[in-house]
Length: 436
Ligand code: GDP
Ligand code: GDP
Image (cartoon, rainbow, N blue to C red; front, side):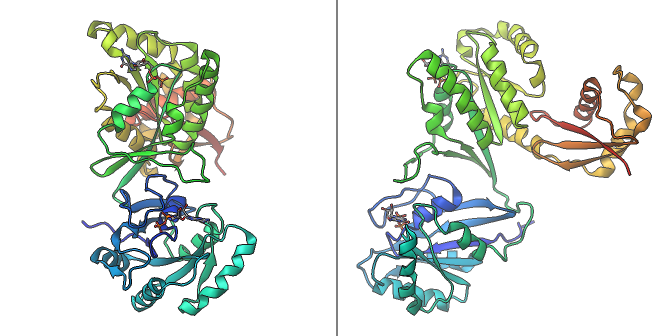
């Protein structure tokens, strides 16, 4: 079965007008190379984005155009033609601070003939004053003209509103899965070492655009149809200068990284055991409702025989994270690191799992409420259950009165759900509501 066609936005323009900067701005990735040398090869040209309720692909044709600013006629290669054929919308990008060049005219003609909707974006309008620059470009014969500054993030929302207005709303239709991964933990547990090991095999080109914060450097690793995006890798590598500073920084960073991620790797240190700091950081991941994997690092310093005891210690001290699978590995030697990829994928999918209402209510029928020892158990009163949300999966139990469930009864329901469906790796949320 072939995937349904995805809305595609293609960015075209002569070298150095800012295509790559715009691409990064829209996709939020800093993975493409941005530089002054025209014709520089990009390592990334197509990325999926989710903007408001719409999901679409953005293509940067920068690496596909041959020749430079002065070369005329520009060589429009087969790859550019192919990209334009798949386009739902084309953004023709132009440098608002430069004169119209022969290449601009040639590209404008070419795009108008392509029979696809074309929007002219006049880049480098960095201030309100610069917005007047657009007037000069109407002569290119493209009626939809928008001033933007890719570098400063100005006018981008308005441009996207215009180009994405006819893109379908709703769930992603891509068959390429993007999972954002955060690596969190106390100082010195091995976060940077693990990050290096997991991204190390990849040629990873990371660069900061002038004017953007150095904070947001993500690195992608592709495995089959899944892209694992390690978020804010600069932040993961950042170290505090003193122990206290490092400790504080790790907590602040953990909160930030959790927000950015779909799946969180909480790194524990086998040589130190589970500490209060681990519990604090793990608590944030749980509160945020993110999928979670507990990674026991530095396992090269322990033996296989110690595994059950350590497992026990983890489960005992981090009881509220009982849904998270445990992975024992050594970031230093690399032993066990590769198996994290399928674990991350599994936890992510669990967090996205949606159980149809019919199935849920058959589940409810089968629950043996007699086994609940909770004082708040009110078996007879649950009439109906639905799952209105995912990430994390959220269940609403409808009862006669809609009273909040007792904590232990919530635990009971969660355990029953976990037993019936595969939710390993994700927290679950339970709500009660009054049935009208
Ligand atoms: P591409 O060759 O079209 O992909 O262009 P790049 O994205 O590599 O950008 C070329 C140059 O223009 C870089 O030095 C960018 O920093 C700069 N640039 C990109 N967008 C803007 C902008 O909005 N304002 C200004 N002033 N410079 C920009
Ligand atoms: P971070 O502060 O959490 O980013 O920790 P680092 O990655 O900088 O690692 C802290 C120290 O632990 C370094 O000396 C690493 O070499 C060491 N380390 C990291 N992973 C392992 C491991 O799997 N085994 C051993 N024995 N040492 C490790």
